[in-house]
Image (tube, rainbow, N blue to C red; front, side):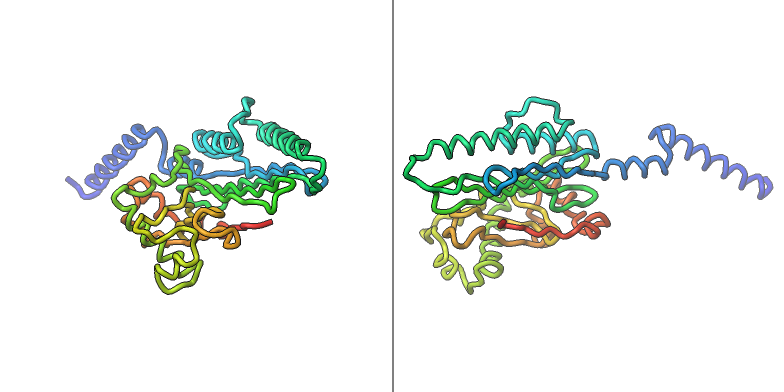
Length: 293
């Protein structure tokens, strides 16, 4: 067989193989790349409501408007559930949902103020809520829920900082189940060291307990009640006010690098965490935890 005939036969064979691959997948390599980009795309709209005075409710949301259907639906449902789970309207209309909870919370605060004895002089109750997208990669998104509340007549307000991680492909939520059960003791010890070095800046565990409300009585050091948050710098573990330390300490927290926790993650979580420094993550504004107003 002549050489040019062999080349022609090979070319036909390669083309046939490519066509079979395209027929099996239903799209060309370029279309596949576009589909993957579409799955990782996620956009939000800032929807915010607040009154003319500092008293009452302020509600801010990064409301999902575009992304995979499952992701958008799951984030919207998380917002609805976190705010109370009472809204029964169409979640496609984020403004209506925000207005519903804004009015509901204002009515609750007004009722609380009206129930105060007449001899108590107070400014008035308030609640500030921020539901923000604080970090994003091609594979996951981290949302925070930052709530500050003050009831008229109380000595001071209180703040809750929590959040959740979503897988972009299907909207699955990742909380503490991101860690293997048999790795929790390792995670616990890393948190203890992180609190010592990063937050309380003490030399050892005994000095750490000197700063806490809990006692070193042989019981396991408590893990945070709220979910770990994936950020641009690692996994952030946050304790709420009074959870382990006095109010004056605010929110004791520490951040552990992804690489350090790699063997503690479940297989599902590990595959997502590896994207923490991809092109979306590195261009995303690094998260800052604004624990105060």
